[in-house]
Image (cartoon, rainbow, N blue to C red):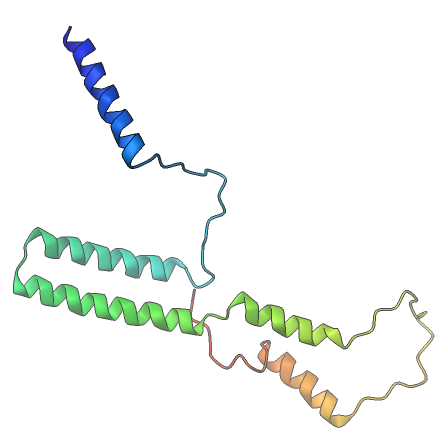
Length: 148
């Protein structure tokens, strides 16, 4: 008798909630939105920030609040620096698109003993190539990346 009553109450509450609020569906196959700047260091900073917040909530004293705010600000500043210093995939896509757009693709390959007659490279072209090889980065990318 008690179990039947409980089931009726549970059914009524569940149906009313589904009708008024709706049901949430979770897509298991959804692509995870992991940012390129998210790394172990960022995770540790976020965990530290969360732990300090929970400590502050456990005892709402002015000392704990100051400690939490100080640690939160340090963590946020470090995370911002990591985000700023991590090159985005768009920069690399743009770089390689520009790098290889000038190259002509050809179906014919030169034999080992053949050389094209019009091989000439200017000093400026050579300097640009050497500069790219030295940095390993696009010229627009001037910031160094952190240890992420």
